[in-house]
Amino acid sequence: MKEAMFYQKLPGDKVHCGLCRFRCLIGEGNRGVCGVRENRGGILYTLVYGKAVAEHVDPIEKKPLFHVQPGSTS
Image (cartoon, rainbow, N blue to C red; front, side, top):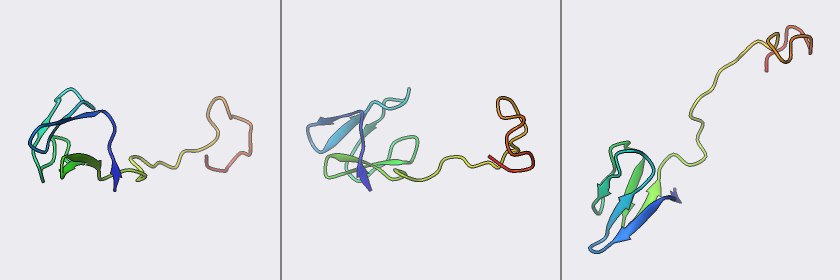
């Protein structure tokens, strides 16, 4: 777990998340609408730091790599 960015600490161990459009007010021990940021002791932590959010195998025969190592994947 890593301390999140883009949030403000508020009195009473609450935090105001500023990452997305919901601007969640998150109380102690709770998560925001996204479910991936959690308030622990008045510090907002990201629960997904360093994890892949998308993965896809794509053929390399597409622009701009059309003739680079045909048959391999990017």
